[in-house]
Image (cartoon, rainbow, N blue to C red; front, side, top):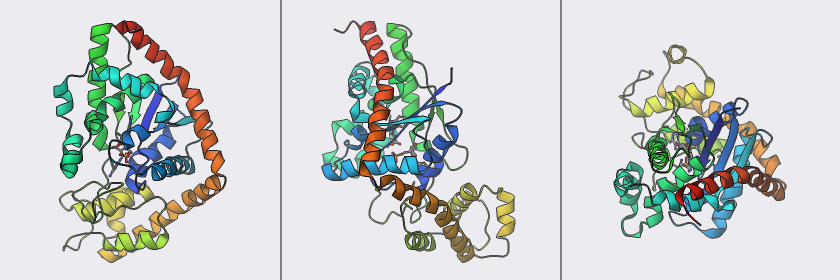
Length: 327
Ligand code: AMP
Ligand code: TRP
């Protein structure tokens, strides 16, 4: 039996190179070794306000980008969270066993709610319970994500252990898989913040569908510092972030990268990095255009994906209900 990989991505904003390097590209790499489930989490997306027609379009765009990046529908099931009611149902059940104090410790909620103040929804607070439901429903072994999701996966493990302790062995305890390098790609305008899909005004992320001109302009504008030498130094977040992106796209060793730039300046690094990113995104973008030329094709793959995973979700949900005496 192959171990099972599960991960999710929100269909909001523009999927960026941080999502790609830390998550999507690794999902592609894991495909041959594991059984894979990738979920487009639209129920998570509505924890903050969304425009309905935009959301619908973004779900298809996200799916298209996953396939364009190399997720193979023969090897991986890609599906939309709201196509299966079991996610919301299990989230409710987990709500009733997760102590409030655990949820109150979630740092992502504290950050996100601080930005919205009065309009923050109850759903945003409950986001981690829905995420735990996503993972536990499929009895996943491994959850490949970026660093920002570590705490949510810890909560998922704790919730699963607590349920198992109260009602008997029901859920497999999943493990987070977080890359050693690039688990947190930083914003280009503010390298102290993580790159994000829909950041505040000045934020600067490189989207997977960005044109070459946009990539060049953003990289050239990226914040650096007033020093000159080019080396990996976490104390210099701007230059460090550019070098990490360079490292991940080229696969070169750090020492080789530092040697390569030893007699060069920041402008050279930026020029080279922009072309490397453009070269990496270009095949993905043409694949995306091919895949989306027939809009019904993506819908078809998503329907198939949901059909394939439904029996797994239903099996866990009925076991949970039985254990709890529901119905
Ligand atoms: P999200 O954009 O929140 O739906 O995230 C999708 C995946 O990308 C998750 O595994 C995140 O942990 C990961 N991710 C999001 N932003 C970054 C970032 N700036 N650097 C690295 N990984 C990220
Ligand atoms: N919360 C994740 C993010 O924003 C997305 C997500 C939802 C997820 N459910 C998941 C990731 C389950 C891994 C497993 O990145």
